[in-house]
Amino acid sequence: MIELGRETPQFVPKEGGLKYAPLSAPAAGHLGSKQMDMLADVLSWGLPAFVILIAVPQGATSALAWIGAALVLSMTGMVYFLIRAFCVPHRTIELRHHRGIAYLSGSILIAAAWGVLPVPVRPLSGLPNDVHPSHISLAFGAGQLALLRLASYAMLFVLMTEVCANPRRAERMLTLLYVGFVAHAAWALLSLYALGDTLLLGDKPAYQGVATGTFVNRNSFASFMAMGAVIGTARLAAVMLSAERAFLPRASNGAVVLQVLGLLLILSALAATGSRMGVFSALIAIGSVICFLAIKAGTLGRRTGWALSLGAFVLALFILSTFGQTTLERLVFVPADWEVRLELYRQTWAMIMARPWVGYGVDGFHVAFELFHQPDLRMDRTWQLPHNTYLSLWVDYGIPLGSLTLVLVAVVFAKLLRALRQRRHGYGPAVIGCAVIILAAVHSLADFSFEIAANVYVFIALVCLGLAPARGSEGTESKPDDMERMETGRGL
View (tube, rainbow, N blue to C red):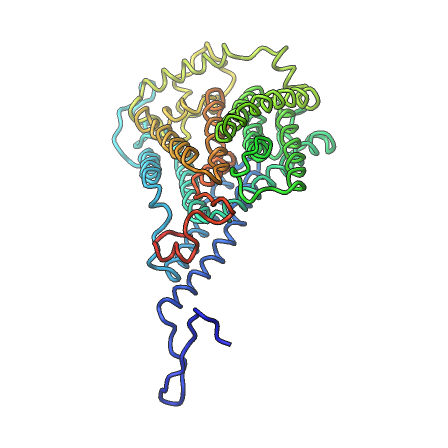
């Protein structure tokens, strides 16, 4: 039986009998689109799995993890775009809708590569000319590995924008990421309270008695959990504020219960980290989620938002008192090492001013800082990072190029705010993206959590989900469907 509107192959007379005629261009295009649709579906499962699993080997802090991540993402990207070029050669990539982000990201990669190229640079005082490197970076090997890590960030962004362009897949990926966060939280609590406080693959080198999950540093794990808490809070707050259009399709009652249990696990693991800045920045991000959703929900939502904020504060106090005794003790009884931290910032700033235009190369702080380390700061300790991401950027690239990353994040934040303001439906992921940027901006003032690769991968994934097209009011896409996107040049 021949289906209406569907082209069938024709028999034509040829030498040796009847032969099938080749499919026409529209039919071939439809077949290619179906193949790309299947490939994108696979990636909508694979990319969240990558983002969650890459955090297992100690938060992806080792060079081996960076090499593995770069290899996986580059091979995936190569296969994806080769198949794409074969199946739908006329379709343009989704990245063209984010040209400003692409140009800034490319400039940052060029700046990182510039640090390991043999370029003339003024010798540093205190370093003999005969041992002065022939390139900007004082840690050449670390700079090369950092360039590989940065390239993997860029590839993840490109792949995420391709897959997230379909709202159905974007919603699936957000759900999978949340499930992954819940699994990490469950492991962290199980490891801390039932398995003798160990890492997944060995003993803890530090931070005994607090939750670190698969991470080495409690502050980095706290930021990781805070991003999961942002997702859970956004989903639940949308229901409580009657902002059903924030996430489509609407969650069932059973799904809401599971999300509540997952959020409680994540918040408990966050409280058990003992990270003061982690908890503080998480509360700021959660508060911003409630504020954004309350504003979108209207007058009634704003009133409910105040009650919800009070409830969230009470819940946070309860969880801190139950699982976060260490956090409360550090808040009340252990004085913050602000004098030491401020001295570190002062010496780091002096280091920046010695090379304000070119910096010391990506990941070169631990080597270059020894040239500026003064006795006012402990001399028996090697300072690996300045505990402030803004200063880290200026140390690595210099002030002009180091500020490109800040400009890039500001551009992304502006795009998310514009999407949040313009969308009537499906604006929940944009709320999450804005809150995650606020989280990173606050925590980066006093720590290096968002210099850890596992956190950066999650950050990129959530931002891409926020930038993705939204669904319509009935769960249908507000953008063209896959076949229409192929015809109009929009990717899947």
